[in-house]
Length: 215
Image (cartoon, rainbow, N blue to C red; front, side, top):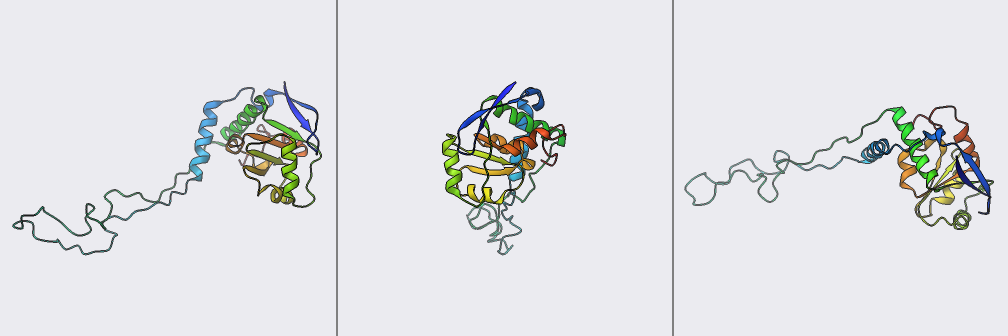
């Protein structure tokens, strides 16, 4: 049984919550996590790099001078790849790097990523914290009270515009609704902070992943 620290809105520890490891798969599946991370990083690649071949660069196709009798090395057209301004012999072309693993695999990867964070004591739950208006200083204050110095992912129960606006100017801090969590985002941040209602939604989900199957 894992113990998750519970803090109030001013950053003071008020207790802890219990979490059964079996709800998150019981063990961290490292191979699956690697596959998930590779997929998410591949899907982020733009794949828009392109260079021109000799058939696409400007210039005449005329042979520069005759093949023999000049005493010089043989030479073809000006668009030859070995000449300055010529086309590339085997240039990079636009391509799609994206691919997908199965939904169940993505769900299991998310559970493994969260379990690893819970086991390392890098997850905390914040109770009673609500932003009535965008205020970056208030978010910075609560993070300082929680002794969060590195990167941090704040998980809300739903899209919270005030919280998002309050955190967007803080370096290495992002806010995601619980329905948009995925293994890659969980792993790339050092700390994960659940707002209490988001944590309750996370535990109350009936789906085997505990999270929306779209991630």
